[in-house]
Length: 247
Image 1 (cartoon, one colour):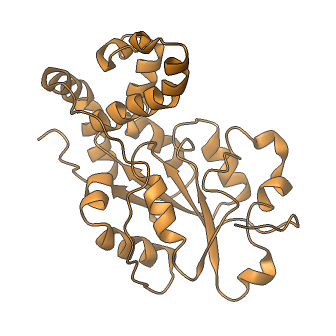
Image 2: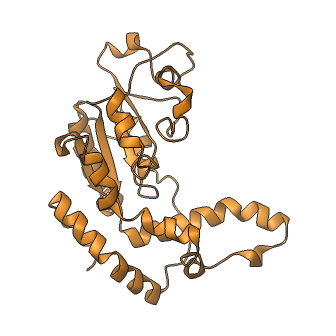
């Protein structure tokens, strides 16, 4: 963890999303590389929540330039960046050459995981208030505002199109979460190559932020797969990649 309060430098890479797609695990694996220095924390939220703090505040979250002259690189991972429409232009203004990494997961699984993350955050309060029955089901959540956010976060093509207005595809590495989960070694090789650092083996593939909950209802899954199909088709066309989420 960086202790200095002196201004550092801009990051070399950003993991911009998406939420509940494996960004925490990927970032923690990357900072085990001897030439990748960690930021003050994984999610700095400068370009969305903390933009009013100014660019010098942001630069203080990264290692000093004198440490990075030896060939080190650094970066952060704020998964909300991909979703916030204000972020692409803000990033481009300060860091037009930054490398962008994106993890995309089946939007049905992403939404269900997002729901359980929110429930777990509220669990201590519910238990204190003896209101465990106040939980709403995933299906009920989809009918209210928070559920719409779960859905919109999985409409990846809309979000990536905003980024592609400012950054070329060659500056972005798009990864499929399912492949990362099943073969982290292969994904890390690809990421290290993209970042331009020498390959280093990572031996500890601890899973970070893994949810523990029962599978989604089969009928609900079918309905959501049908809902997301046109959005997934647009994503496949945009990236010229087939994610096989509808199969």
